[in-house]
Image (cartoon, rainbow, N blue to C red):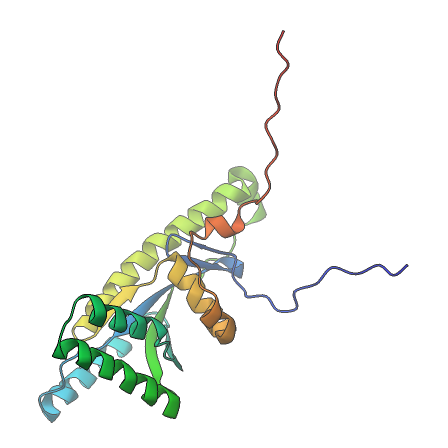
Length: 225
């Protein structure tokens, strides 16, 4: 009788935990990620554009730690936008406005069939200082769990400070920065690792709900006298 072997995951992401907006990597590495968006106003003239570019160059040259700039281009999911537009046209508009909403939805659908519409998102990955693991004597005195918690808390405070500083520097260039939360971090890593799966599956709960046991031991009932 042949024994079937359990499936083995051949590829694993180098992530230990995602907690309190911080990604924990192996060997004591921690990361936070900012999503950066530009201004909706066009630049008035070449002088304004040059000033913004000079400000961005000053920001990069003034960094005392490395950052990673990530640019992702992915197909636009128009299904939710079109459904919301059609519902708004039926329920909140009347007359010519409803007809315009219907025509606009048809135009978007036709445009999506003719070409692939892409959206670009920009991210800045902010690291904490690389912290080497404590010596075995120090870990025996404090305990490995307490030592890891202390390093994680120190990294969390440093990442908070660095993200706020990066946000202020980018704001001077006319850019808005927003720090990603736990679910957003998990989905971004999933989208980078497997774009097809990320489009079909989204995290809709707290991350703890995906890691807790689905089956728990029933409480023991003591017999009554």
